[in-house]
Length: 218
View (cartoon, rainbow, N blue to C red):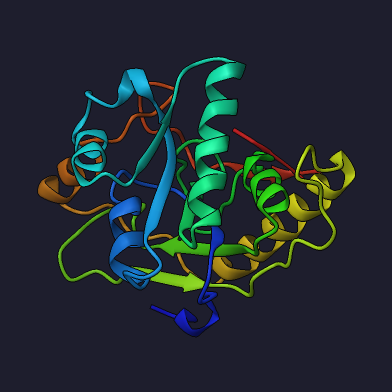
């Protein structure tokens, strides 16, 4: 754990990188118990499927949402209320898992939007070492400098401000993970553990993305 002293003592939105189903568990293990941490998502229809989602539902740390705009609006309102009571809201900003220790996929605008609406800092948090899980391997959780919200609107943050804050946390996460090498594939047990609860949009683990012309491509 590196940079834990950078975590704000009050409410904040934590935007974390995401390679593996175990990442939310590592976030909970690494950051202080107070203020309490909640995770934005997943969809309510998924809450009873998969070990990770069931565990989050049992622990009461998920902010699930119904599909569609209304569901997201309601979940955002709940997240704002939790932030207003001093809690931390953690979001996997990439919106999916990815492969590659030194990769951060283009972030969604939700973390910055929520931080601006609630007027709380946006904290980059990078997780490395979970691309492949294995015994006696190093897992690093590194916290970056909080990004202050600046002027905001409780009705609707300006799109340009959301884009600027999203770009800032993207740059911060890329800087936090740049020195961690990709790990060799583990043995059979490690490979099974790694993929046990992973849900790849492609159906199977994709190759590590390559950067071309400042955009991520597969």
